[in-house]
Length: 103
Image (cartoon, rainbow, N blue to C red; front, side):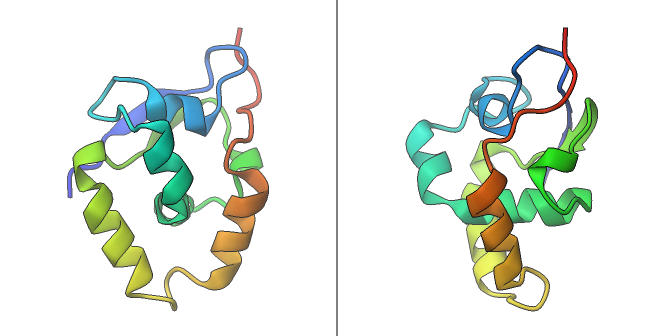
């Protein structure tokens, strides 16, 4: 799976949701895809070693390309040890969290 590092948080009011919707670095997710696939956000938490989206600081994070969404969903759904239910709880609380900083 090709997972680029994407620069986030240098625009005031930036959020993971907005970055994923942007049409850069192979992202360009639709609102519907983001809304229906919490597995994507769980995978992002795990991939970047963060506890919740409030801990993301401006800089580079790894975000899977839109073309890999189905693989991400299958991966997360098939491994509840690596991606435990608590990750889904964190996503429910924070997935649209603003990234601190920005100009």
